[in-house]
Length: 487
Ligand code: TAP
Image (tube, rainbow, N blue to C red; front, side):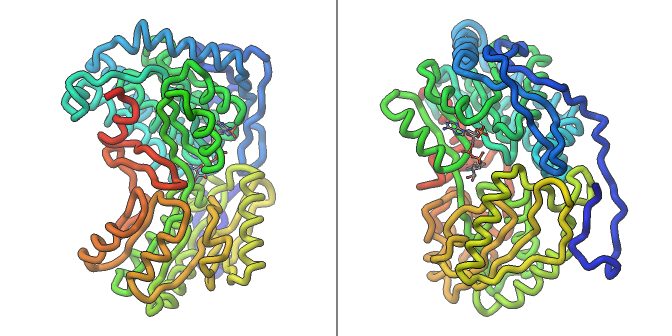
C-alpha cells in the first residue's frame, strides 16, 4: 500500500513511497497474559484477534483475561506491594524506571512500527511523538521517585497499594506510560488493561519490564475486552483506579467504585474549542488547526474539534486551511510521508460516518480535499464542516475522527461563551498576537489545558486532565503524583 496525496494527481510533486520496514518487529502468533513477571495462558484458554486497521490483516491472537485471571493479577500485584516493590526505597525504584526509559529509547523503532501496525497511526507520529513521550514519562517519574518527601506531600508520603489501570486505543504505549510511570515511581504496583484493539505495544513493554528485572508482580498486564476492564476496576483488591477512555464508561466506573473507598481518576472525552482571533499569525494558526484535529486521525481526547474563527478572518483562514489540507497525504501508516493513517476500528469508522451524516442532515456544509481512500482497511478523509451552529450534533458530540466543525464569533466574550458551551472541559486553544488576550481567555475558558499559539503539546512535567464530563484528576507533573499517594 502506498500513501496517496490528496492533491489532484499530476498537478503536483509526488513523493516516492518511503515505507519503514516492518522487519524490525517480530510479532508472535499468540500472546499470553503478563502476570507475576511471566507470560501465562489465560485460565479460560480463550484468545481474540488483533488486526492491522490499515489492511484488516490479522496480526496476532491475544489472551482474553477472565475473572480468574484478574484475581491472579491483583493477587500478584498485592504480593509485590507488600513484599517487594512496595518496600523498595525511592532511589531503588528510580533505577528500574530509568532502565525502562532507556530500553524504550533503544527499541524505539520496534515500538513505533508495532504501534503503527496495531493502531493505524502514521509512523512519523508513533516515531516522533508516542514513543519519545513514553520514554520521557519514565525518565521524568524516575527523577521523582527518590524526592517524594520534598514534593509537598509531607515528609513520608505512602503509596496507595494496588492500582487498577484501564487505557484506550488512541495512544496505546503512551497511555500505558502515563499510567505505569507515576504509579511505580510512587511505590504502587499495577495491573494494566490495554484496549482490545491495540494490545501489542503494552505486551512489548511487558517484555521490557521483565528484562529490566522489576520484582515479579510490580507490573501485570492483562489483555481482554470491556468485561476484563470492568472486572479489574470492580475488584475488591484494587486500591486505586485510573481510567482513560470514554465519558460513558467513565460514568459506569464512577458508579461501580462509589462507596468502596477506592481512589479514582478519570481522563475522559472532550470537544475542545480552538479559537482564532483576527490578529493571529494566520499561517501558524492554520498549522495549529491541522495539528489540532488531524493529528492521530483526530483520535485525540483533547483534539481541537471545534474551530472558532473571528468573523473578519473566517473566509481567509478557511481558504488557507483548505489549501493546506489538499497537501496532506493519506495512506500506508508505515510510509514516512504519510500524514493521515487508518481509523483504528470498524466500530469507530461507523461512529464517525454516523456523526458526519448527522452534520449533513442538519444542514452544515461538508468539504474534503480530493482524496482516494485505500480499498481495504478503515479510512476516512480529512473533513471540514462550515456553517455549523451550536445546536448541531457535530458541534456538541465528540466525533473522535478527522472531522472539524467550524463556527464563527465576533467578540472575545462571544468566543468564550461558545467555547464553554459544552459538557466537556479538557482543553482549548487560543491564537492571537496579544499576550493580555491570551491571559484573559485562559482565565475564562473552562478547560484543564489551554494552549496559546500552539496545540497538542505534551510534556510529562505538565499536568493534564479535565473538568466536568472530561473527568477529574491530573496526570503528569507534581499534581499527577498526588493521585497515587496517600498524603
Ligand atoms: P472506551 O470504550 O471507554 O474504552 C476505554 C478502555 O476501557 C478500553 O480498554 C476498554 O476495553 C475499557 N472498557 C470498556 N468498557 C469498560 C467497562 N465497563 N469497565 C471498565 N473498562 C471498560 O473508550 P475508547 O473507545 O477506547 O476511547 C475513546 C474515548 O477515550 C474517547 O471518548 C476519548 O476522548 C477518550 N480518551 C480520553 C483521554 C484523556 S487523557 N482524557 C485520552 C484518550 C482517550 P475495550 O477496548 O476492550 O473496549
